Amino acid sequence: MNNLFLLHTHYLPKSLLQTANVVGTIIVPDFYSDMNHYYWNKPMSYSNIFSYLDDNVIELPSNIVWHCSIENINMVQKKEWLPLLKGTKIISFQLFHSKDNLYYSYNNGLSDNGKELMKVLSNNQYILDISHINDRHIYEICNIYDGIICISHCGCSDLYKGKIGRTNSISKDTLVNLSGKTNVYFGIAFLNDIICEVENEQDDNIICKNIADQITLFTEIVGNERVMIGPDYFNIEYFSKKFNTELKIPKELYTDQGFENLRHLLMKNNLTCNAIDNVFFKNGMRLINLMTNIEND
Image (cartoon, rainbow, N blue to C red; front, side, top):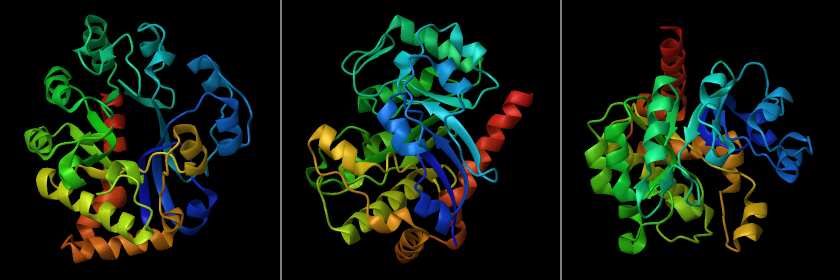
């Protein structure tokens, strides 16, 4: 049975909880009733972070260390809320998702409000998640933010057919530039449209190999102590319909057997057992311990 830490997921499938030892995770709260019904059997919607937290929507086994990352930054209607959220389950904020916001524009980068947000996030010692950020803005933001940064669910565009960037992709050149920034961590997604050589790949074996190749490339460039697994959402049927595309995560990765097979693929790529354990769970637990120690200083 593999120990696992998921850096970015919207929920944990029961089949994974029953077959693997999930030691920790960072969960992305969803604020819509259909998602909360599907994930937690609680059909409630929320327009306010505080009411979501008050309702204790997320229920996980007591042995799992878990925190939250806010993906929809628009839920932070006032920067003054950020200090009030310290001490809650929220540990991370994602700057940008799919639409320009008050803080960041995909084409123009950080706004003045965004630069102010960086200061407030840093002062309150939150993780800054820069997933989905335009590749050309990543290094600029990493130079501004002096706290912990993660790109929680991504893939490298140099492994894509044609090397054309997609949402959540970063180039090999950017990875090399970030290799010396020890405060930046990376989570490898499992979705075919993020990590596969061919964007709509449907063959489970090829998808798993592509995941292994992505993990291998990241560890070769930044080291195996800053790479984790960040599957994203497992509810692929819903989002395939929503985005009118053929999203896929191999079914075997909903159970421990998939991770055992992934381990063998990584070993074939010359990763050691210790390096794989780092990626699978040790790096995530070290990150949580680091954040806990920062809060206690």
